[in-house]
Image (cartoon, one colour):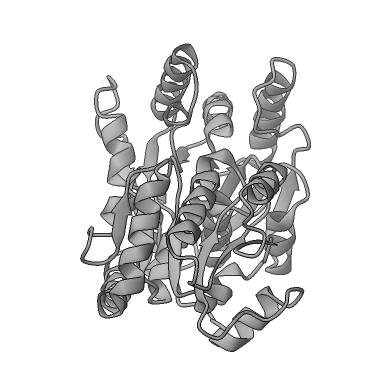
Length: 383
């Protein structure tokens, strides 16, 4: 997308260099703004995000001390590293992503007198499963992050609602929904053969259920696996396969659960795929079983692929899907509702097809990457 070139320097900052929703967000914005601004990305580690950015000739700066977990030793050191970096780089705009680096980074940017500080909230840490005291502490830190930044981008209206009672933030919050572009997609046969190449062929009438998710507690995959058990018990003659594309720290727990429930023939952890969206054609239905979510990229991508979607009604997901019109919304952590939704789609093929078409139309109209990019650049350039 052509933009008028400026002399401004734009510096993205993100804690982890793995590949998740926030990393995809930074990657997409960085490669589409590099011809307008002098763009660089500060990352922790040397993971996939760093590699992909360098492949696109986007300059990256590594800070090895970045980590997701709170550390009373490392975090002050990260603050001083960022402060030194901002003073050296002299960016016109700093765009911070992820909760922890948001707080440390906005504070460092203020001390470095960065002219424009933008923070994107991809989710609030106080919405995760934590004790009462931790939730209050994270709410306070998020509030300070919003105060220290010049403007905070929220990827869903639900996130804005969560912060609506916080004082002194009027005019600092802007909702910019995540957006997706068209992407290449494999044929169904190709996608299935690649994903399942190491397994014996499935019967031709197999019902394929798909998920793309980091193997992490917040994604609620254990509840999805338990729903598959209910589906198997209720329909022993049905051939179906639940394929999860993704990797993460929860793999061993899920493998143990799959073994204990006797689902080794029905649930397949396919591992990480760089081009995961291109495999969506393998599935008959897509599942997002998240316990907490801001605005899931994978739901948007499943919509672009015209898949009927079952999704937890958390965060901004109801802003994408209208229940029983463009998909099925369920309560999180509820295997019974997941199983019932599967059963409905199995027995209502016409409605399932309609869900996919309507969701695709909504994503293209209201969640395009072009729209997201233009609204984000408007935040950068606001006087």
